[in-house]
Length: 338
Ligand code: SF4
Image 1 (cartoon, helix red, strand yellow):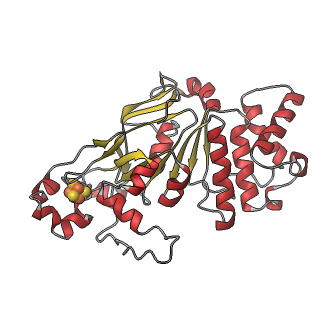
Image 2: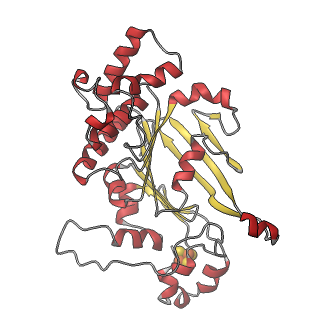
Image 3: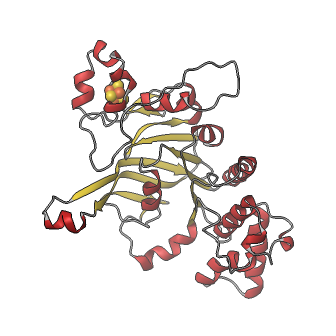
């Protein structure tokens, strides 16, 4: 059980995007539509804790991270950092906060400026925030690189991004976040663009940073990564968290049919494991037209197989939106059948 002080508290967060109608739609006076990217999401991240936000592409996990970082404005809900409500802080008021909350991007090939040497890239945030003398900045750059696993730093300081491997680039991106000595890292699919061989190294690095006291919100589509490294897992589907709990509980005793389906498609280590993958049927989620009732019902194996009807729940599944309920200590799911 995590008892560390809370860094981040997100409560009932709602983020929506207007959908462009185009010239034809405007002339035809089609009604304006919105994408319900995030719909009432709540979670916390403590110091020294890693929470993995898991879900398939388009489920709203990246928008959640961007809203938490205040790169996108929410429609409603609150984001608190160290107890302070930061939901409506203006750009200037957010500036000191940006040092304490850092984002690591998915693509280390895109996030580094090809014209900058490693030294310049990692020093840049210190210059932006007017921190330290030239000598202090140089020491902080060296420390951040070595903390990110690029040691001795002298070997890397004068290299350009094209002289680094994918894993080394991601380490430079992490050093660029660490140089400001943040308390919270938001890592958006930090290994999805990397070779399988270096993924474990980067995840182990994030794990060691968590152990040193940083809070980490990791966005990933990979449930096996979340199970291996996170303390807690929150599973998102179509803008909502549908299951949340301690990582081992969610993976070993999943309570939501969507989580169960995700687990069946994770590659098994044991070749004798003959679990049949549960391939979800139906359309991929569309956040503009969210189904009524349980948003998962058009694809839910419990409905498709008739098990929900046998238990007298099918009408409820189609008509009533289930809320998250605690089913075991700290383990919640949003399903009428759970
Ligand atoms: Fe499936 Fe019904 Fe549970 Fe939704 S509430 S996940 S449709 S069983």
